[in-house]
Image 1 (cartoon, rainbow, N blue to C red):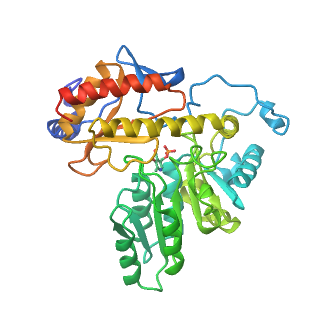
Image 2 (cartoon, protein in one colour):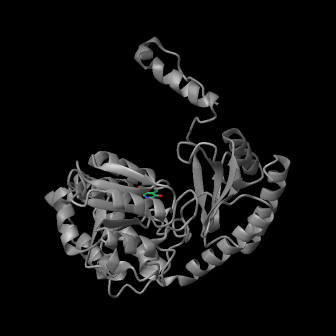
Image 3 (cartoon, rainbow, N blue to C red):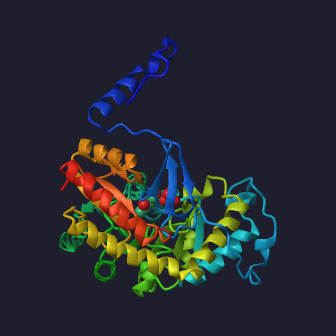
Length: 404
Ligand SMILES: Cc1ncc(COP(=O)(O)O)c(C=O)c1O
């Protein structure tokens, strides 16, 4: 419930904000922060209660896990103390040697010529898209692409053509009608963050060739999870060489922070010269690159985490669907229960929290109007017993609230 903490004449100029907040509250769209402590093995502590964490993007369970001993002989600098701050942009004096080493090895892992680290996925999408297209160019974007992609397109001033989710017929129509002289970019999430659906990547690669467009794929939710060593979906589908721009984040399955773009050397040099979210920001601290380096090594080595996550996800999707829930077309570890009304979604999430399950209600504008939902996400560190218990609780609560 929204409460004005301190009615004050001093803040007279901000009263309009309070009115806006009240309007959001009336529509059950008010957002707020809740202190949350992450616990090991896929649990968390919130509102004085321990809950099963079915709401994070820590798919492999690496963010809160005791560091295991790794063979670090090839990574001698991992034993060196790294500075806590980078003190400047990469282009000034912030480009520590650990960046060079990490980018070289991560590019080899992805199977690309080069890799460039960005501060986070949001800034990567802004910086990449706004530098590879501009006024007069065209961007074809899946309607369910992440907000950072949409914001990158807006910032670029290119014309945005949105196509229905995974609707390649509509995309092809749009490509056909496009002026062949205009620069074209097709951009898609690999896994859609609120639906758990997978983009038709092979077909997209074929289409972009046919119409002379560049293809950019955001692997935020597939990196670390798909591919034999967690290289991502493009690698698993052997599409690495066919996609000009691959990006992903280290904040999800890798349980760390930061993001990357992987592709050709030319792309890297171009972005170093044009990408404002790389040029005009302080580089991530070397200590953080050190952390993500070791998180990546763990993600790569612990293939049991990927196996278990995907196996449990299959089980959970089947279970929730057979209980009668609408899980959309989820195909992976992100499993929504589409409720429809925002009020009922909030109520559902709140009742689940009382029962010890953290699942967050996702409302418009993050999802389309009338499609509010609970977005459940699984972690490799959950046990099957955890999930069986959760499915039973979700079922009882869903029945009680008339969701099923
Ligand atoms: C598809 C997608 N792209 C980009 C991002 C942004 O990444 P980051 O959290 O590293 O800023 C997210 C999530 O936040 C995402 O889901």
